[in-house]
Length: 391
Image (cartoon, rainbow, N blue to C red; front, side):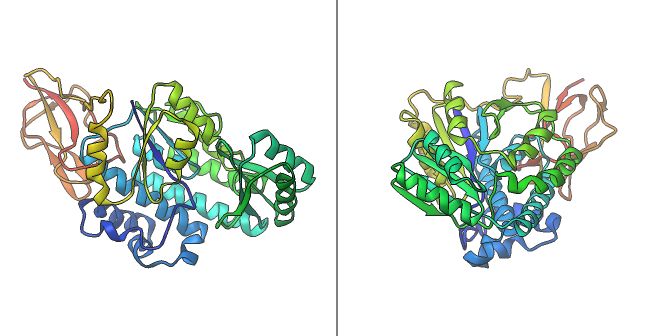
């Protein structure tokens, strides 16, 4: 059983896009730049640490970097049984499993980052990691501070993040040290995320999430808010907006995935922070972090070494001889012909949709059984698009 996990803000680093220049998956960056109206490639290649620290840059670059890694992994044929993302990474997970279209995901991340940036301007805050103290003791320290400070992330055993006003975090830091914390480390972020300071951003984002209309998905995503798997798109409007001002229960998410049979965790994106958290939380878990093309071979070997290899099957592998698949001619965002419905008769050469600027034409006569890819999904070359039953 395999899970894909996606990192959040704070994992970005200068030059994280350089290993991907010239790789097929870099096309995703060019598409993202067109949608965002910004040169995402320049941010991934040339931006310094201070530029990337800006929430508006950190979230967009981390999101696109993770999807670029995902694109490369999907080209190898690997698919997860569950997904989860830490904070911003939850948007990556939703895009990865098709609950959000590629364009909708980019626009939502841009809006989320802008809303959080403005909330930080209105209520300046800081975040610090507390190491070596139980969750309950950290919560007690926040209450003893009697100030604006809260637990923002339950990351792993002995690793909790607190956030709030500079004064509140300083007071709570003094209390956690008195209670036995080993270290308190200030984090390089620009605000008090996942606290009541983000309430204005939550209210602003709720409408944007509703307009994106998250779809149902076959692969569930474990939510930061309640640490439970969800596959209904209608639930994510509430979950994503609540996430902004609620603590990220990442430790609990990992435990939930383990209880659902997951024993292999692959982190896709910059850094390797989530891999360390999984090791601390689940002693028996197998973990791997993929952030560069050179690590793709390592993934193939790692999967092959699994004690019980997970069969990676794509829809349509066991179709009867009278059935055919229409596949994508290239990598890009898929847009179907909306007038085509299940049961439509298709002739050789008929256009079923577009992948970027390329037409998806059928090589067969047949009856359309269903579209396998959904509108807005980013597909790879040769990925199945539609399922036909031949006449």
